[in-house]
Length: 201
Image 1 (tube, rainbow, N blue to C red):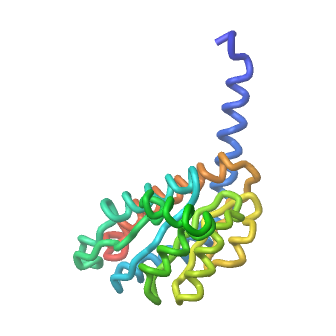
Image 2 (tube, rainbow, N blue to C red):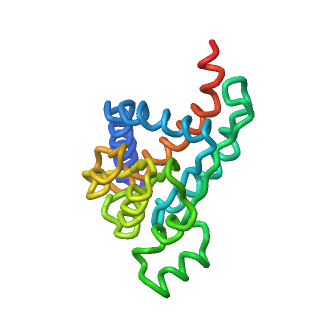
């Protein structure tokens, strides 16, 4: 279209940058550590808590919807177990109560302290890696004996050094970081659904 002369090169550049972020070797290395944690949580009936702000909150909710519904352990290796998981950002009354009565930085840590038990898993999602409420929740999770996973980008921020396993997208673009996080969630959903058949071959 002659009225949009910059669209085609912009599209080419954007998709190339996203592809580069997906093809970097960090991704497999992180997933090889994350998948066993999630499978172990399912096998032991542990709860996996997801949380994030804004677009990352949406990703956390999407993760829970997909792995709870699609990635159930219905095959021979899963023995009928499903993932027990919860997105802390989904409870709007809880979020607003903690933010209003205490401080916004407590909106995930407060409920986590009430709900989590040692051996559970916390998955923190933050594009910048510096969201105060996400960091506070990870600190609470560590103090309670949870295994912690962080999905981040833009250098990883403070989050990358707080969690047990960090997946840091090698991009300074929030859009590409969130793109990759969404691909990761769908990849994990498909793999966790299919890994029983793969393992039994």
